Image (cartoon, rainbow, N blue to C red):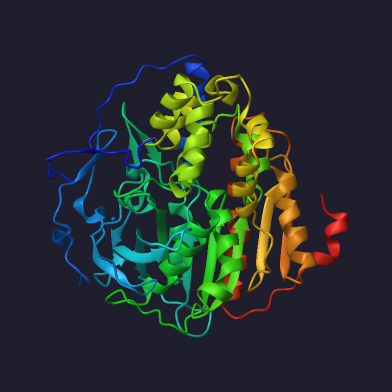
Length: 469
């Protein structure tokens, strides 16, 4: 596994173009149906610190999509976490001119800022800040929502900031949907400013995205909130109330950030966190992903952790067969749609030398157990009120482990609002049981965050946990 998954191109075109025709494999009809369903679900639901031209290198091409040179990090980064490296205007893919001449729902800026990765090293992270056109009517100065996107993939073309400019990229080479854009727009409509992180290595072309690494994600989200204050024209300040919002991978990122805020970013005025379907226990989550429509996420996880911990790479190389090595390389440049079409319903037993599943290998390898134990969310008390939501039928990011996170936080004295989403079984392993709560609960989730941004107190329901599914 190479730490760099993109290919260089001399092209200077910054708009995505699609190549690499791919033939559907087995179960193509089923996989295509899942992908189309995901598109339909998303449908229901664009003054620099350093000029972008200062990147001084060519754009990168990932699966036929040209990544703008903006995303190439410089050799040197600022020392302070959350410091801006560079900015440029970001045209929102869905926007309209307002009566007063300002764009609706807001004016967006593409960001690159400095963060710290899980190894304590500096890392450049990209994202976007949107200054809303609507006034904030919740009382006090304009607040900020730091939004952590759900799973987008590991290819640089999957970056959430790019999806704000291109909400849907679909073709023979890649399929990426900005399904969290609707939450962004709903917060903007309420007059809250929004900053979105791309996470470490997603978009930025110097490394792989470290998928579901709690430290990388938590740091990147908190540093995005810091970076937002320095954007030219931003109305948010160091005293602005900050809310964290995320579902699925984003739920894990927001949950991690809620735990880390008091020690890593005490200067961020955190008032509330929404963590939907958080992958708190990766050992359990990997069992749910294996053999599912999102089996490609196993590759993203392994690739990211092997990059962070070189000792793990030796274990991976020794235990994977040619099929597994090809899957790890292939997934490293894929978005969700690509992974569904290319590796949907794959079983990790087909990737190993001895036919062991990933769960079996983890159980037999103390080193792997130790790595995943460090990723466990729930060992620290969240710094502000948290609303944790999990679908009782969720078989991808398992319900039981998400509920256990609420229990862990409650035992530590956290202010936790736990909400189990009760829906019928909508189909095993095809993502519907995981995605449905995102859609059905989103309105309540956004309302809860807006109440915290307005200064309203949250009342914990930890007392009800023994009665809750």
